[in-house]
View 1 (cartoon, rainbow, N blue to C red):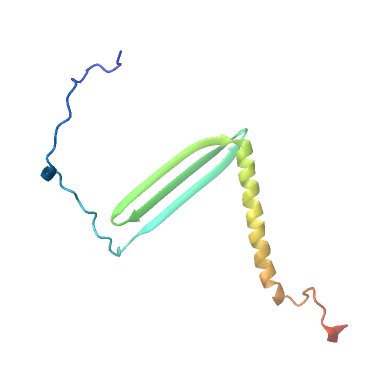
View 2: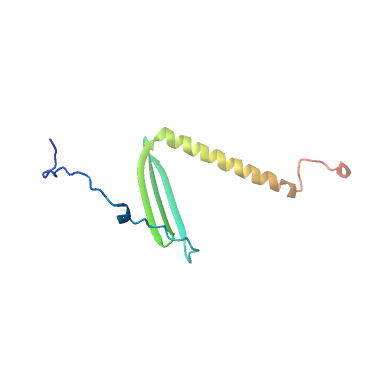
Length: 115
């Protein structure tokens, strides 16, 4: 039994003539005067759960779109995510320091004239 208070009568599908359907072409994309994107994600942990909040807003082609998300995940997944983020950050910092090490006066190579 349906929980809805009113039941709609069964109807046969209508037949549509081919000429009656109008196909709309999408508007041509032009270079907009203004467009932007904004995104924000916050992850916090308290107790055995981690909370995730995310927001994404964009204005493109004259259309403003906003999305929001909130959820919870297991603490183990949070710990793994933090560990991966730290590992990636330290790897990028090591690459930066290695590329700048030639500027330091005490690089690992000894010069023959200073022995």
